[in-house]
Length: 315
Ligand SMILES: NC(=O)c1ccc[n+]([C@@H]2O[C@H](COP(=O)([O-])OP(=O)(O)OC[C@H]3O[C@@H](n4cnc5c(N)ncnc54)[C@H](O)[C@@H]3O)[C@@H](O)[C@H]2O)c1
Image 1 (cartoon, rainbow, N blue to C red):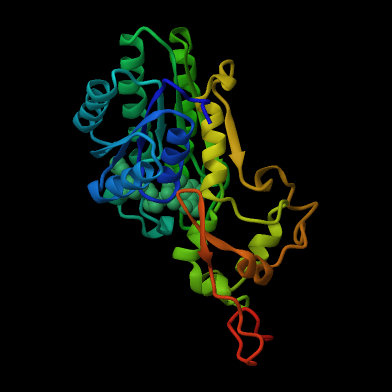
Image 2: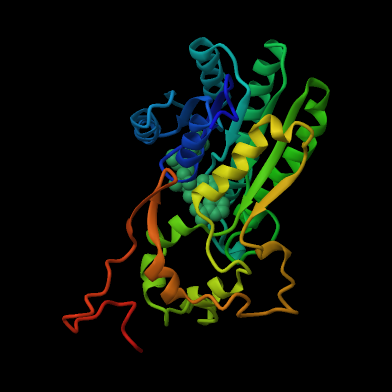
C-alpha cells in the first residue's frame, strides 16, 4: 500500500471513470493526488470519494489543452503539496465521423486534442520535476485506436497515434533529467459497456446496422483472448506500476491493457478464442466505481416466480 509514499501526482482528466480510479489507486498507494478535470464537478466527485477512503486529494478545474490552465494546475500542485513526481494524462475530446463527411474545424480540433494535452501536461510537469531537482514518471492513456484502423474514427485514431509518437519522443527528450514517459493502452472498457452500450450488451442479437450488421458485442467479447473487458482498476494497476520506482528503468514503452487483443493474430484465430459469451459476462458483471465493486449490472433473474430477465430469456 506504500508503493508511492512521499510522492505527489497530478491526474489530468480525472472524472469518476478511468481517471478517478487511477487517482484513487495512486492515493491508496500513498501519493498525494491533485485531481484535475475540465469539469470541476467531476474532479470534486473523485476527490470526495478519495477522501472518504482516508486518502489525500485536491481538486483543480482546468482544460489540459490550454497552456495557461496546465501551467496554473501544476503551480497549484507545487503550492499545495510542494512538488510533482507523477503525471497521468488522458484529457481530450474528438469528433467521430466518416472521413468523407468530416468538417475541417472538427478535424483540426480533434487531431490536436490528445497530443496537445500530451505536450502541455508533459512540459509543465517535467519543468516542475526539473526545478525540484528530481526525476519523475509521466503516463499517457492511449486507446487501441492508436494502433488499429477504426471506421468513423480517423480523427480519434490520428489523435491517439500522435500521442503515442509524442510520448516515445518525450521519453527521449526527458531521459537526461531522470523523467520517464510511458503509455498505457486500453481497449473498449467494461464501464463503457454499461453506459454507452448498455442496450447493445443486453441484447445478444444486436447488430450494428450502419456497418451492415456484421458484428455484435458477443462477437467482440469472443475476440478477447482473456475473455473479459478491462476494468478501470486494470488500467490503474498498470499505471501504479509505471508511476512507482519498480519501473525506474522503464521509459518509452506502451503497456497494452486489452485482454490480449493487440497481440492476437485475427486471421489465424478469428473468433471464439476464450469461449466467453456475453450472457455469462453480463450475468456475472458487477458495476465498479473508483475500482470498488458495486451492485450487479443487472439484477439476479427471479427464477422461482418463473419471470425472466433480458439475459436469461432464450431467443
Ligand atoms: N472508455 C473506454 O472504453 C476507453 C477505451 C480506450 C481508451 N479510453 C481512453 O481513456 C481515457 C478516459 O476514458 P473514460 O472512459 O474515463 O472517459 P470519460 O469521458 O469518463 O473521462 C474523461 C474525463 O476527461 C475530462 N476531460 C475531457 N477533456 C478534457 C480536457 N481538455 N481537459 C481536462 N479534462 C478533460 C472529462 O471531463 C472526463 O471527466 C480517455 O483518454 C479515452 O480516450 C477509454
